[in-house]
Length: 522
Image 1: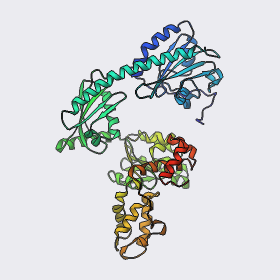
Image 2: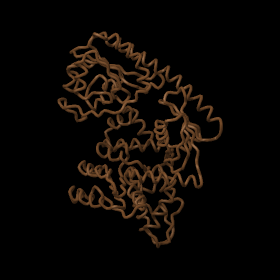
Image 3: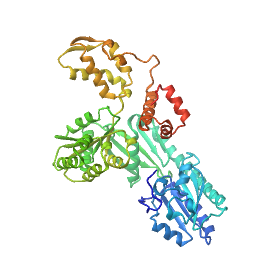
Image 4: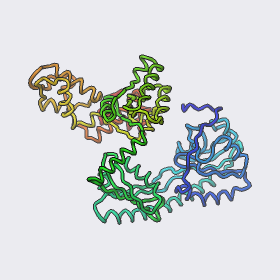
C-alpha cells in the first residue's frame, strides 16, 4: 500500500540528529553497559528516536555494520514501515509494543538475513514513545534470551528519562513561576517536552508563534538574547529569551508588544525579510471559503496578477499550461497565482517547484484544500510557503453571515432598494452552508430575483432554506467537531471504517458522534 518493492533499493534520506536529545543522553550509559555485556556474541544494537530515525548504532559483528552501511541505514536514516517495510523498529513503533522480526519476516529482501528484536521506550510521564531499542544479529532466529535483556535495558532508559524530566521540569517551573509573578506580561517557558504559558501569552500567541519561539530558542548562543519580529496575527513584539540553567534545552521567553515608531520599524524589517526570502504564500480552506478571492486581495499588493487554474490544463493540455506558466514566471514583477495546487498533475507540480527558487521571478501565491489533506508533490510544494492563511468554513463564521449577505446583495443588485428582514437574516445564519461562500452567493442571487424593491423575507428563500433546525443549535466546539467528521467522511467517500481510522476513533464512537452531531449518512 505504501508503494514499496521488496527487491528495490532503500531510498532513505539521512537527517541531522541532536546529540543533546534527552533520549540519547538518557540511553548512553545504559547502552554502554548493555553493549559491554554483548561483546563476543555477534549481536548489535540500534536505537531510533520518536520519528524512527537512527540516532545510535553499535556493532560487535562487522558484517552487520557493512551490511547496513551498504543499505544506507546510517545515523539519521528513517526506518519507518512506509520507508523500508516491516522491520523490528518501524513495526514496533506502529503496534506500540515489542516485536521480534526474524529472517524472511522482513518485507525487504535485503534485510531477510537479519533477525531483530525491537522494544519501544516510553516516557514515564507523557506515555509517549520516545524511541525503539533493537538488538540485531545475522541469523535466521534470534535467541529467546533477548526479550528480557532488552526489556530491562529499555526500562532503565525510561527511568533515566523520568529522572531527567523531573529535574528539568522542576527548574523550568520555578523559573516560570518567578517570572510570571513579576508583572502582567506574556511569559512562556519552553522545555523539550513541556510548554508553560500564562494567560497573557495565551491571548497573544498562536500555536505557530509558539513553534517559532521554539525555533528561535535553538538559535540562542548566549544566556540571554533579544529578538524583534511580527507575530502571525500581525502584532510587532520584542522577545527576550533566557536559558534556564538546569532545564535540558529549556528557556524562559518574555514577549512584549511594541508600539509607535519602533513597531513600524519591526513591521518594515519583517516585510523586508519576507521579501528577501521571496517565499510563496499559501491560502488553504475547503471549497467555497473564498480562497481565490483572498488570493486576488493579496495580489493587489504586487500587480499585475496572472491566475493559473488546473482546469486549463485539462482543457488545453499540460504542455500549453506549462508554456503559459513559464511565460508568466519570466516577467520581472507582478504576481502569479496557482489556484488549486492539489488538483494539478505531478508533472506540472514539478514545474512549479522548479520555479520557486528562481531569482527575479514574480510573487507566487498558491491556493489549496486543507493542508492536512495534501499529499505527495502538492504537500511538498505547500511546504515552500512561509506565509500561510487558512480560511475557515462559513459554518464556523456564523456571526459574519449578516455582513457577508449584505455585501453580496449590494454587489449583485447595486441599484435596487432592497433590504433583508431580521427573520431572514436569522434564518440565513442558522444554515450549515456546506457550499460555503459560493452557496451563500447563489442564495442571495435567488433573493434578488424575487423583487426589485422592499423587504426580503423568509418566504423569498428557496424552500430548502426556509426552515431552521428544530433542535438546539450546535455550539462552536460541536460545530468544529462536526466539520472535521464531515470532511473525513467526504475524503473517504463515505467509508466509515476508513473515516474512523483517519479520525483515530472506533467505528462505534464515530456512529455515536454522527448521531449526536446530526450528520446524515454519506
